[in-house]
Image (tube, rainbow, N blue to C red):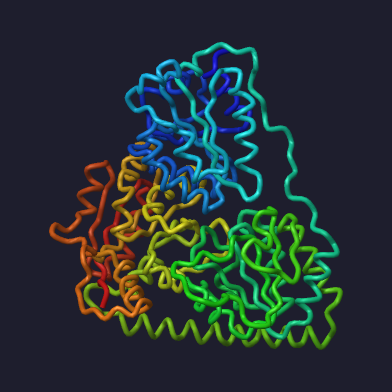
Length: 556
């Protein structure tokens, strides 16, 4: 058996039926083998970064390990930013790249470089197969490490000569692995006691709850209602772990320690669930946790437990089982007085939620007739034109608050976004979501600056017939950078009236409809907000990829 056959048979043994890739010469052994494996589809991308970005979101949306094949050193370099995003997202991925013939490595061949060293900083494990006998055990280990908690990408270099060597060591499947162990009862009892003693409990729900599935989310809802607790998401998140229409959901946390502390102000018990906690954009002194608050954490993987914060109680265990057991422990220990207090808290949260909704209605009404279209109006119209069962892939950045005020996300599979802060993940990620979930419409909403980082994704959508509706919010600027330079000047006490240098996307203006047409995707440009919802409805009804460019207001 040749090395390339070991690779393909290993993919089949691990249930891989798609390869996200960009073809190149050193990948010839894999590409030439595809005809013998009709059950494995190759998703073609025009840039390695788009391939890795699509695989990241595919892993999230499918719950499976994504497999990526890149092209040697420059190709791996093109993909590193998106692999970093996958690491932050906790996406299980096996990333491979063809490598030059090992017999030529001392000749410094064209495209040659140390791929293992390149990939190591953004992966959980980075290795190169040096002989065909190593391929089967390396690949088996790669799939295992990618899925160990917290999951993430690994890298395997595949030299072209190794892929053509003969070996007697055949492919190895994953076996049956049960990773989510039961929580320690004593630890859960300790957390339950802290929760029962709280007058203002707050829960921060991380992405891992959504990854754990509907049972974990249902247990979280039950626990929240039993405690009368507020629920917050991190500012940067890839999933929604709690229904956003629920009265207890308060929104997203700030991007520095004081901002998070303001969001959590008054809490006397904070429970951190399934996440890294917290990714800050700006340094500011102080703790993000309220003074005097008791802090507990539940994680599926040991590396995150008590990593950033000292805990009053911490438990490692499967999130679904842990949350269900914690809910039962709270129910067993909750007095009638405590139940009444929790019900009062839930009523207060419901009243606050109703007031917030009214504030948003007034905000949209006030901005309704602005020209160019306000972000609030644009997102309201996008919601009106989008099917109720659509999955939203989000890279709105500065329009994110309006997106969440316009859409309700009931389930962890309704929404996908990128972590880590790197832009360009939206358009690429939408490809992976559409491949994983062909049964549901997919809406991708992106700013114009972010879209240009992975605009080649449009060609892949057309080539593979992925019926994604791409909405590009075109304000002709890097609006988030303008906000950030304001924050920078304020934080470092810089007195400046200088303009925003190099942050406008004009001269020439970008033409997204024309760019889409050049890649085989139909497009519509909308400047009249009254026409936005009908344009979306028509785009979804077409059953084909479609881009809608929406002219919106810039920074005021």
